[in-house]
Length: 213
Ligand code: SAH
Image 1: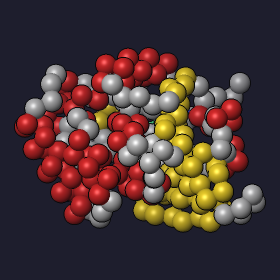
Image 2: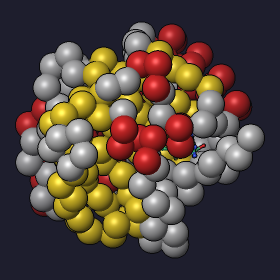
Image 3: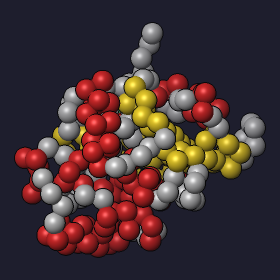
């Protein structure tokens, strides 16, 4: 598959759809206009890649809806060079958005098949996250903490304490919380012990799974 002017045109339209849904951050919209989402998906979905919808990827998982990716990225309020932890690499589309905003990205995936596939894809495309890790993101990545931002791209039954502990003061954790449906939640770390919590609309994600051993 290639990236063509036709795909570019569809991305411009998608960006307009996201603006109509309330996305306003120029850098986030630029990422949507640049990232060739159709290449992150199975070729059978190519014709649908620029619809604002989630689609199946390998291992029973999904590539997030563009609106969701834009919304979560906007909530991070990223600045160039910030250190960001992403839980749930999946197809790598959200990772690419973070890289497009010039973040230093650590990303964790617990499905081996997806981890391998997406790692190869990143290399092929020239996307360079700082580290792609195979493991359980529920625990975060203590050896690289603290982070300016943490973004969870799977539905969490509750906010993992380990992730809160790995935020810098002033850092932002963006996490969908809930079972069937999730409330998009933003936690801002105010001090060692205080967090400000803001809740946004409801979304639907595949579940964040915890490895018990
Ligand atoms: N950002 C991805 C979303 C993929 S769906 C994209 O746009 O393609 C969510 C991903 O989270 C799935 O790939 C799933 O395997 C992964 N996941 C679920 N629980 C996890 C955990 N505890 N640690 C790391 N990844 C997890």
